[in-house]
Length: 307
Image 1 (tube, helix red, strand yellow):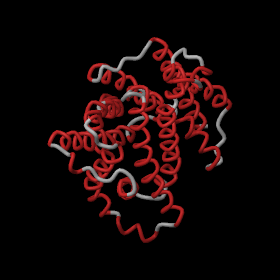
Image 2: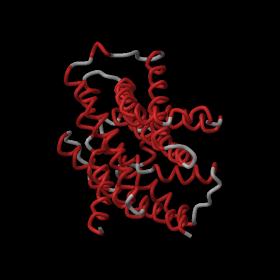
Image 3: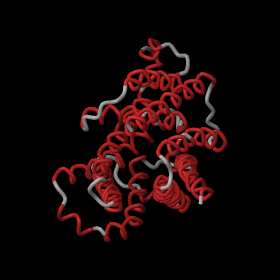
């Protein structure tokens, strides 16, 4: 039984490996002229269809939802699921398709989540938060800009490097908000309902965004593009989430936190192997500092919750 428990714990790590496989399939779509919003729209179409059976099973609960719950579902769908995904990809594209740096910056999410929980849920972070949060930001700077002088980034051509990281960090902030809002939703609602409505509201948001911006690009969809969209949607989206939550159900939160750190490591290796994206020594050092600080923040919050 103990061996089975340990094997189940590794499913969290397996989910992180699936997430890391996203960029090699996504980049050809973007290079081929597809807008990040349109790719995300197609993903939400597939994931909405896959979530339909579970959503229909709990559909009756929609009548009893409060205004606060409806607002929460709209936010995690339109904000944390749809808009954040678009910003994340746009950030990577702005950094010359550097999904590795964007993924490492995504690990700032716990910093924003703890801060938002403090503001909206009145949770009081331990003193370690105020010590490690600046360290995490310092690591994020290192992984993005290396040893570059901060003053130089605001002048000349250096200022052009700011938009990509800013978009990736904005996505992390939206995802952090989704963590806080989603945590409050699942306490009173069925998980299948929350997940299903997240994809539906994300789909509606992206459809509206495309109508009023770049428009739909079905005319550019070739066979290979459809193949990549389906792979992204099922492998790194729907299936990865199922595996992750299965593992999380059988894994102590402290161990799951360690397992999730396989994501930035796997992203770095996958993108280096398949996309030729390598990090400099200064970026590797910054990434190590960032991950160390985030691990400390997570473990500190877990101890605070247990006490």
